[in-house]
Length: 164
Ligand SMILES: [Zn+2]
Image (cartoon, rainbow, N blue to C red):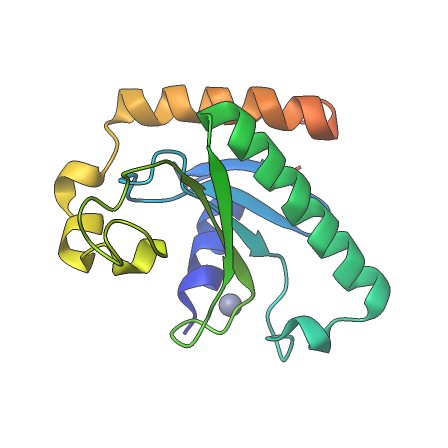
């Protein structure tokens, strides 16, 4: 059982409220929690035995990295990041997926190294607190902002919501 595959299944059924756009190599979704305003994930379309970047054929890897880079550009513009952070983790869920965090001065408060450091040094219970979940209205606004910038970098989406 893979959480990312579950979420992709929801996207394909039109049941994932965080889904923003399908690209050639993956799906753009907003994060469930938005302490880092604009936190977005880019989920690789396939799982199977492809769980490392070095498992991908070079052309496919280049496409995946290019898509991710342009998603990060759109996220940065949509949510006015000072700096983007990019992470490909996956000890819990091996499915290739990027965490794209817009960073701003002071966003981890006093934590980390005097307020500096990776997002994961912000306390987990705060990062995943219910107050960090966007309301339906906030989520709709964020999706619209991100869609507008994704349209600028990738061209308009071919279809509306859900899988073509
Ligand atoms: Zn998976």
